[in-house]
Length: 474
Image 1 (cartoon, rainbow, N blue to C red):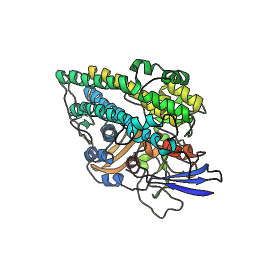
Image 2 (cartoon, rainbow, N blue to C red):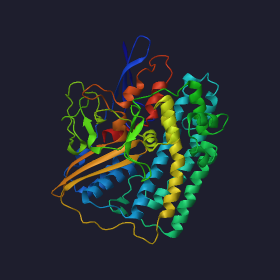
Image 3 (cartoon, rainbow, N blue to C red):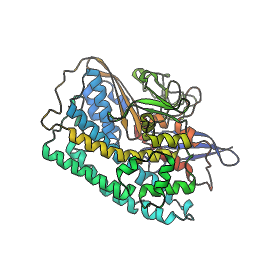
Image 4 (cartoon, helix red, strand yellow):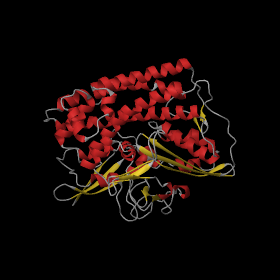
């Protein structure tokens, strides 16, 4: 047995280390995923006025700050027993969807695909095309995406004032009113993204992409097609990546954009079950944190560097005692998207399935955003005043780009008594629990080859989860 430690990873949001135990043939028999940086936002929030959370929690992350804002606003709304006005809800979910689409494609072009320009692939017939498209700093496809991304974020500027760290998303709505002329301008911007996706990412209409309902249909669609998404599928086929990086095939979603349901899909039942929020528990057996397994509404964040067998600052969320994967693939599985279901039934929740689910969701988000913007009533209010209670609890559950994000809030005497956060990467990059079950990434790395001379499949699998480590350790 030999041990290989990888880290820090580049092109990852935050700090990440992975320790692999290899057998004599170089196969991974055990993986330990370490989130090595403690940031302590949950402790920073204690004792503050509840509305301070709207300013503080978006700064957990510079990539998915709107998602953090949304979760905080929903937790505060739940505490105050209010709901946002319809216009406010439409604008908030639109801003979140805009951020999620941007995150998906930032991951694809800047984080994930550059790995295929690794020198280990230089003898492959597609290598030169990969370098031309995705090489860091000079890839043609990445340059096109960055230009499209800049235009896309003008939506956030009009709807939320700025990105990241907007304060426009509030418990009872959004602070930015939209006029009829701005509504038309917003729809024009969505049209620009539609054209980019159609002409560059997919090389086909969004309707055609969304109509793909099976693995066979997807492969036939990609064959011979000149587009960035098709190129990934062709490379994945050449490298036989369809089954690589499979974890538990257990998927959890909090429900997305008022369009997709919350729930859990498990291969054992091959069906979606309703979400039971009370069944979520965070364990700390392998974390440098004190306390014991508890529901996040009762959780604490107390550093304990001397904890025996600990190797990460990340807690270990479990659902009914079992690890669960979250993200775009989980959303699609819970919602019953035929393409996602067929990919998982055929090849499992592999790195290929995760990436395809993100790309597919991009096409769906554009159609949703167009519909939501037309629903906005420019003559109606976007926010209403709130009378805040002095104590109580609230929970905010949203879907960030990387998956299920939850905020649990407790207020006493007008101050935050407890604030607990479970980010998507907390689920996916969790360490072992008290029974020794590895987290989803740890499980997905088992069986891969690593060490000297190995192909960079470990890097592909790690990045297929689109890790955001600063959210993980919040």
